[in-house]
Each structure stands twice: as C-alpha cells, then as structure tokens.
Length: 388
Image (cartoon, rainbow, N blue to C red; front, side):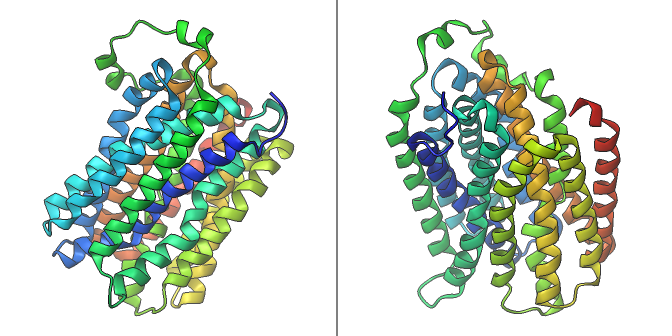
C-alpha cells in the first residue's frame, strides 16, 4: 500500500459517504419542524430522533459481522438503499409513522457507516491514518454546509414542501449506492481474510457490542457527540423562539467549519498526539455551549456554532484515527461497527437529554447541562491520556 490518500477507491468511498450524509443533514433541521407541525413537543421530537439511534445501535454488530464475512462495500450499498426506501414512510402525516421511518432509516445508517469505516480502515495508508481519517470525516461533515440550507429553501419554496424534501433525500441515497457499486470491484475481499472468521451464529452478532480494543475511542466519541443534536437539530427551534431569521446561514457556517476543520485538525493529531487533540475538542465544545446561552442574534449563533464544530471536528477525527489504529484486520468489520455505534447512540441519548432538558429547564438550562457533561468528558480524557 502506498502513502497516497487520494486513490480512485478513496474518492468513490468519500462520494458515497457524502451522498448518504446529504440525506441525514437535509433531514436534521426538517424533522423537528415536521414533528412540531404534527403537534409534537420538543420531548416528542427527541423521541422521534432517538428511534433512529436505537435501531442503528442494535443493527451495527450484525452489520459488522456481515462486513467481515461478506463484503464491506455490499453492507454500505445496502445501507444506502435502505435509507432511500425508509424515508417514504414520512409521507404519512402521523407522528408514529415519522418515528417508524426514522427508526428504519437508522438501519440504513448503520450499514452506511459500518461499511464505510471498515473500508477506510482497509485502505488508509499506515503512516497517514490521522490525515486520512480527517479527510474522510471532513467529506462526511461537508454535507452540513449545503444540504440543511437547501432543505430549508426547498421546504419553503412555492413548488416545495416536506414531500419534496423527502423525495430529494431518497435520490441522494440512491446516488450514493451507485457510487458504491462502481467502487465495489476494487475492494473485493482477499481470500486469506475470508478464511479467518469467528464461528459465531449470525443471529448472535446483534448481542455482541463490546470490542475491547476499540472501546476507549468509542466512549470518547460518544461523549464528544452527545451534545451535538442541540447544535444541529434543536437549535432551529431555539432560533424560532428568539425570532432569528435567515437561519440557513448558521448551517452553512457550521458545515464549513466542520468540513475545513476535520482534515486540517486530523492531520494535526498525527503531530501533537491524540490525547491533546481529544482534550482540545472537549474544551472548545464547553466554551461554545456556555457562550451560546448569551446568544441573541444570528451572528452570535454562528460564532458559537463554529467554535463548537471546531471542537467536534478535532475530537471526532482524532477518535476515528485511534479506532483505525487499533482495529484488528481479522475483526475489522465488527470493531469498526462497535466504534460507529457511538454516533447513533450519542445522537439518540443526546436527543432525549436535550429534549427533556428543554421541557424541564428551558433552552438556556439545557445548554448549561450539556456544557457540564462536556466538562466531565474533558476530565475523563485528561485522566486517560496515557492510553491515547
């Protein structure tokens, strides 16, 4: 394997991920608005978002086992197609239908991420894993720049609406699956890797969550992202409460910060060390969550959101590099599945915490609660620095 990151395979993998993440980030601001229009409270919004996380978490070990036994690219392609199909349940104007659609979409999300991370671990150059992880996660997060504003524009356009948003997101996922089909022949599984498999019945994979080698990066990633729904989903409800207009610019700003920050800061972690990078990620998120309680206009929201995403970028890309380093080639699919569980689990837990905190303490109280949780994460990371 050469030290070149930008191979044809890597670019096709990134293209598939970009399109799959486009669906997710288009729905990020739209689903809370859709559920509240149907009469749901912020806590109900949290439940609907958590359905996505529950199904995604439960399916990941199974998807990881399939990736090891069959094909990482096939798992990713199947996940993208499942994403596309499930969103059509949102056409039923009923909160339980939206919850079911989001739950089924989580199954597709599990395949997209488990297959993608397993492929990244296979093709990333050994000496440049931090840079490759940063570029990969930067491509994923770049969807946050364009697609939430596009979704809000399409939602409010004379020819648009919720139905138009749902259809466009399905088309993006289908296009991502096509990228995976084009890429698949170049990453067919070598014969020696197929022969080394644990003899575990496929149905038991769903109960096999823990992979010790990958546990610490997974915990850190979960902790870093548990406050993310507040800044990507619930923030639009907060902006409505404050009467802030033109809020699409906020999503452009935080998406640009994440897209640029992940490749640059992922590379930095190769030089300054993983421990310092993870600690910096927690620190920036704490600062942002405290400052946003004083936010009263669009500019303030953008500044706080950018600071938060800077911390999230360095923390997430660094934990991904840690996971890639520690993954056993014989169990790569299962171990990267364990790692990728942290994303939907943090999304679901974070959504429930955020929605519940809003109902109990209001938006300002919610941000302060999340800031305290991230401060605890910083203390944990500093205490485990010798293991990073």
